[in-house]
Amino acid sequence: MIMESSLTFMFAALLMVFSLFTSPTSGVTQETLASICSQTQNQEICEGILESDPGATSADLLGLSLISINLTMKQGRSNYDTFTKFMDNSTDTALKESFRNCVSLYNSIMEKLKVAYQLSEKKEYKSITQPGESQTLAYNCANGLPVDSPTDGISRDMIITCETSASVNQYIVGVSLK
Ligand SMILES: *[C@@H]1O[C@H](CO)[C@@H](O)[C@H](O)[C@H]1NC(C)=O
Ligand SMILES: *[C@@H]1O[C@H](CO)[C@@H](O)[C@H](O)[C@H]1NC(C)=O
View (cartoon, rainbow, N blue to C red):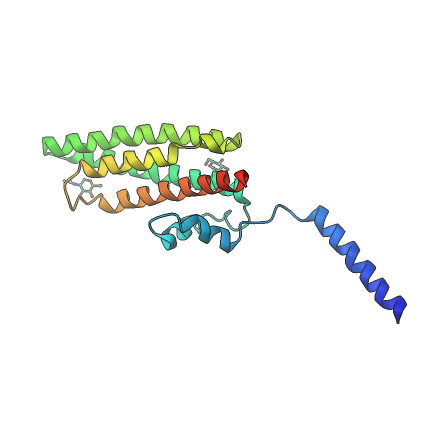
């Protein structure tokens, strides 16, 4: 009886040691995602954005940084293309100019996000300020357009995606300071 339980104990201890060495870097928990997204203007949308990437559930926090920047670049590229179309087909001169301004702002956004991705690869999280700066530029674009512009939806998508990415990176800085 004693023999059996001590064997069980040894087996359990061995399993624990084994799992310590073999477990992959654990994925980001739901609690962490909630904590990150509670810092944004819409927690549910933020979680939805991060979970939209197939790699997000298995990614660790550092992987989530790269994923969040990638998602922001993807939204930025799509918005850039849409604003270019609207610029090209606008007949109103002032409106055309506003769309041209957006195209130029999104050009800067894409440059900034490329830098952010490289900094994330180098794990220089404290220097990752570009998603927040991109959010401001996306606001500037939207604010230059008439109210009820057909592009309002994609502007909102970009603003919250930038904010999500900024929050992921701020969370990483916060955790590493503890
Ligand atoms: C980010 O996007 C690039 C280019 O599409 C891809 O090669 C890379 O694997 C992506 N990174 C992550 C972490 O998903
Ligand atoms: C311009 O192109 C966009 C995107 O293809 C389209 O939604 C919009 O209706 C077009 N506007 C005009 C004035 O042709």
